[in-house]
Length: 252
Image (cartoon, rainbow, N blue to C red; front, side, top):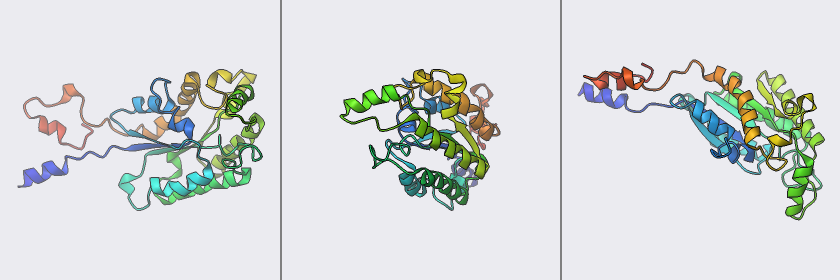
């Protein structure tokens, strides 16, 4: 029965995917709906256009991220390749080696790991124009030192060091010809007090989430602007024969 076969063929709509790859600033802060998470805001903006996937791994650095990336996006399935990917690491890589050797990644290796992930994504069918690198936010040392002391340890990060990693992230993006969001610099422009952007000196507060989203959205919007709204607006569904409207290719 051709009608039946055609109906089955039309049944599964493939939602384009936006993949957010990062550490806890993606994992928890990004998708907290109560905190106005930047990933949650992105999902809200893209409803019925894209699925926004949270691939944030708390505590991870680029050394570990590079290893797991092929398990998140595989080669050879172009239908499955995301329409946009954010890569947001550096808050853990930039931890001080003496105080936090497990998470620390040397600056040159951090840059090479980012480049390596960009190269892998290109080889997996995700070209440069679909990518956004996000540099880590600045560190409020006084607030983060309080958090460290509560854990019985010394201050294990410095804002000036985070800045070196942010600079390396920006340089990798320039070398690769891809978009970058330099949070470290943007949040400190005009010597503004950036502590309100952070909940504990390291992770984003609701205001920080809003700041990140407001700068990220224009970059993501241009990558997804040509995508249709999936399935017709309810007023446009044909009343007598809704199948005509609902079993098309999703954009009319």
